[in-house]
Image 1: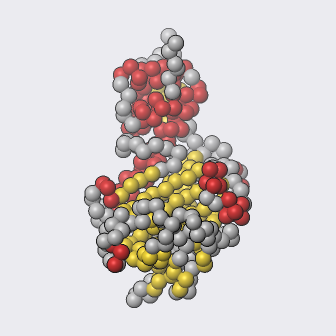
Image 2 (image 1 turned 180 degrees about the vertical axis):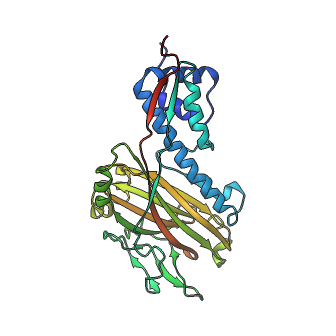
Length: 331
């Protein structure tokens, strides 16, 4: 018995430009005949285009500040597998070309609205120099975490400094392979605003941060230090997340991360993590961390990794309007 195709996988494969002639023809037939698959294809194409635009912008900005060696930078985007770069213009061409001579798609490019969301003390300049709150705060708009401090440069700029790896729950037998900084963002009012608008619009959250690594005595012992930024979306209260950490990660609504591996004396440029803002999400947990790249329960002194200029934005894209036009109405 022949199993039916996995249409979601075939759609993503086609958007990556990896389908053969037979697969493309089969998908074309289903897009014309099946409204659900047609809708799935259009939404996948829109998201594919949006995330590739972000990746292109990210790589363009990174070009002057991050080593060109691919191993130094890793990208992971939630809800969407890692894909080859597909020019946005090709998306529209694919939609038109798939359907053959009998029909054509008329698609108008939706206008995207980008808004900045509030991250408390995202530049760290308004915080006093010195230690950051230890542990895991369940309050909105508070930086907390493993041993961290606000460090002031000679020019007066203040940055977040990762001091030592640890276990944020204080478990002496727990893992201590990373130094984490946390902040909760309340999404309830934003969710209400979005639900009052276009119900079919897509909303993409993007967290961005700049990392820098300076020389330190640990460089030789820990050459694989890496920095990450994460977005975790939940439909629960911050206190429940803190109480259930880290097992509560099994209940996330969505998650995204981006990683930068930096050598001593290297800055990352802007590192971005993007994910879809799911309608049920009420809380975003943003995290910044530096990891030693190995499992350990013994804290490791860091002190040479910094983060600055943390931003969170929301990109809203209206649902793609689609109209089917018969080219040969008399037949």
